[in-house]
Image (cartoon, rainbow over all chains, first blue to last red; front, top):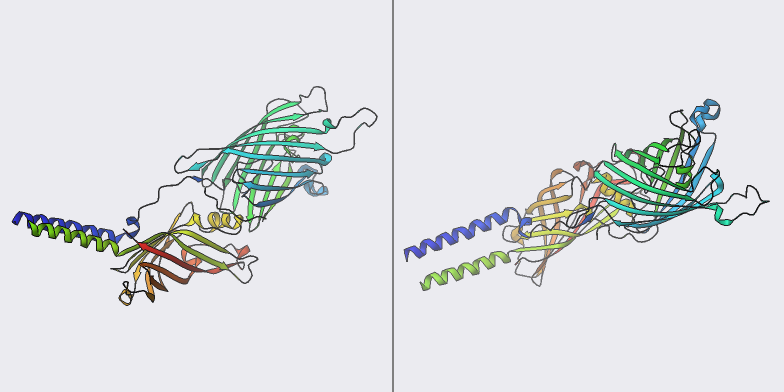
Length: 299
Length: 185
């Protein structure tokens, strides 16, 4: 009997300690939630790095109205206010449909060119259970030159106005403040200006972002053009800029050797060179509107 | 031997009772409103996945709020909330650990509405502050509803509003808590 009493006291003691332990942390009592799969968001402030597409998608149900300006050469000096007297622009809208699907179109003053694209990510960077380290996004786009025919006396084909581009973006938000991406790209021109120029041009984009503060980030956007670079005619486009977020707007201010504001234009028609100091100011202004009900971001 | 069995049985019963002392939910609701008179749109977020545990025996009340689970009418506002204001990657959770000040006024075995005061530590955005809030407990059909409305200064938690939008976001957020607790078994 004494043995039993001892056992009982032990049991009692055990159960009371358990109760005391529970009281100090009630939250532990109901159990920690299993880390759920969560997609990594906000790798870039905008769906464009500067010129090229970024791994970031617009939130479903939002519209991004974008006004882009590329000014004249800074080397024109004070007479032309360092190039600001001339401006080439593109106006466009982008729509977010799903977490991983968006599309957009726009029109540039250069060549009065229309462009449109669809961007879809079969895999997105995520954390938690079943996570994936990078985002892989696919972009398919098309451009259409709407200038009057250069020579109306010859037979012109509508298809000559068109060009296509296909891009794969592999990107990773490495840390809260640092994102990098790689984007192999193919641009197909139905018609090229010179016989020596290839119709298919391959390029690889290197883009990234480094946050300076919560609302300011440095960005860079470089495309290495693999074929179709002719010395003295065209160059690899490089843009370096600053993203500034002010409430509802994102300003992307930058310096670049490219004037083109769609993939065909800036990959195949960048005619200025950094090494010659032929640089331009430019900015992208982005304003996001909510046009459909906001859905929860996490699945 | 018989005595021992009775004792052990009694122990089980006691354990059961102590377990019944605790009530919890994982789907509580907390919303906040930081709309200022000059805000162009309502600055409101709602979280429907709040964990809340109440120990009726001691009056201890604890809550955990996952900041990323706040939902907004505008995706951009949600982005700014997470990225610029509460920095939810750095500080994913807000926790409250406190107790009822006058827990004895509540009779948990009797249905009714009991006005209560809660005091404790609120940890948000990496900063901890002593808070006190008034609210009410509603005991009904074996469940307890915890409700409270109180206000907190954003600056007390190191949440800064940039100069540019200083008058468009309220400096004080009105927080509304509504959690329906089930017995914890």
